[in-house]
Amino acid sequence: MFVGVPIPDGAAMGVRSSFEGVQGSSAMNESRGGGPAPGIDVPPSGEPAGGFWISLLEIFVDPQKVFGRIERGLQWWKPYIAVGLLTAVISWFQRPISVKVIELNLHGLSEEQIEIQRQAVERFGIVGVVLAPLAVLLLTLVVALLVNISVNLVSGRSGFGKVMCLLMFTGLIGIVEQALRLVVIHMRGIEAVE
Image (tube, rainbow, N blue to C red; front, side, top):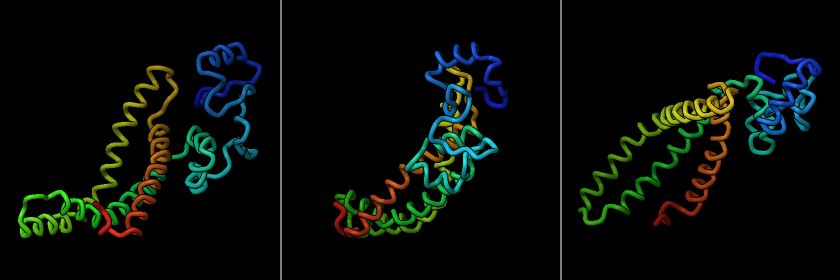
């Protein structure tokens, strides 16, 4: 029931049932008997089957299994590396689109001024590619802190590392959406951006 505190099935049934009324039907990955919820593969060791690599795929098709792994200690820095790399790649391929958008929004400037702006974006675009993963990390740290404080005020059952890991894995969904949008724009051609 509680992280790090095993409760035998029959020993504290009254306590367990009173908590179930507060938390909903049960804890995130536990069924009424204290074991994992149905549908979560559990080998004899009691840990969810798989690890980081399978979690990268399952966050899209069966997120409950990933949430079970996070509950049991999946580390947040592993998905951050994937998120950081994907963010850097997306930022790199976003650069030409950013140049085109700037060119479209610089009404009333001379051709020379527009060229200076375009060169500045191209020159300093690499800085954005390097800083994008750091910006994601900082934003996620702030959001994780706020979520962790809120959850601990309400239920007292959250850990900062778990919240970070959850945010990193769920952030992958938005990053894949960005990547697909970027592919579509590049397939249509950057010249088609209006």
